[in-house]
Image (cartoon, rainbow, N blue to C red; front, side):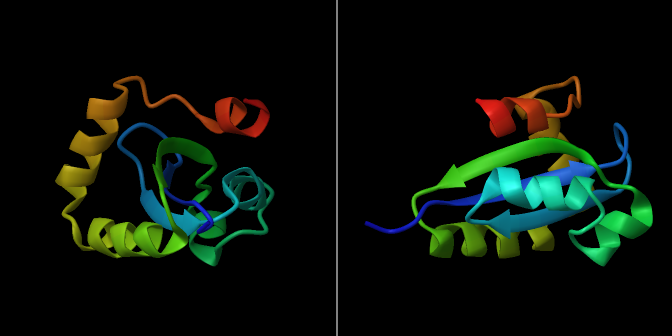
Length: 98
């Protein structure tokens, strides 16, 4: 059975800087970002708010989705986030302990 994968978007505030990532271990990866041990980009811009998560059947599907999302215009990413939830709340507590 293939390992599931996740695509995610992080920000520092509503409509702030956006970072799109992919991982097989979502809670651990977001914890790394929040602790300053993730990407240099997240560290540089203080991106610690998880605002979108998409689960995929395999890590390969997640990687393909991440590449597609990275090619999207910023406005499209914002529309995707707001279609999922308009509040821009941090989803980390829901995924870390849920």
